[in-house]
Image (cartoon, rainbow, N blue to C red; front, side, top):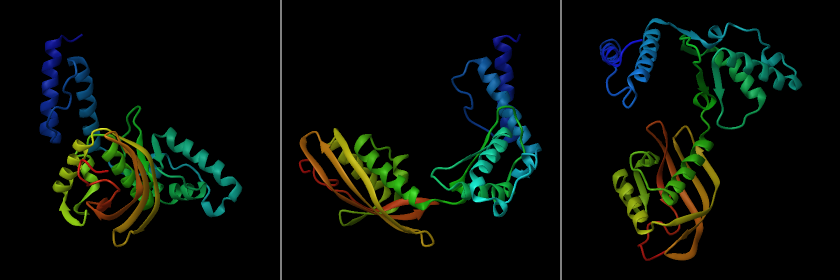
Length: 269
């Protein structure tokens, strides 16, 4: 068994090899004891080595080209069972398909057999390794994305301290608010000022009621109803919210915000 000093020396060598051979820098294993760090660094090194040496393959080839019945030849009452059997096959080979929303068994079966099977992936095989694919990465669900955008924004605004680096990603480069145009940094400041003036807020109700979008032009709108309570003023604030969204940076962002009570002076509701 290697001594702690030997492990530390080996770890430093592994870090150097990762930097020189794979361009990896930084604290890959900060906080781990020498033994755990050694296991982690070896795993990363072996993975990166395999990644360079292993060619990409189609998903269908990766899972061994199993037999399947084309969707056009499947009776409707057999599709659900066929999908379950197919998912068991790909999961056994280390492939997991995730769906953020609900879709019909026919939609997912057709997607797997006609699109996912033709998709190229890394041909790496390691014990316990699972490659995840998400249906919406191939077929974006814009309604779902905008609903999450609005819900997450309101939830962050009223229930947690705003993080301008993380939560600020929901904001477009230019935002219309209170009848004026603001850049992202200014809007982050407005939100933080509001939270400082109202440190204790209870979000009592939120429903996103209407979403419209034009995916081709990257624009859309959303409407919601909201009820919240500010501790300094126990009367509930309730009303309708309106948002405009735009596709920026490859995802939906808020470019216009209207929320009852948000943006007023600290002594107003």
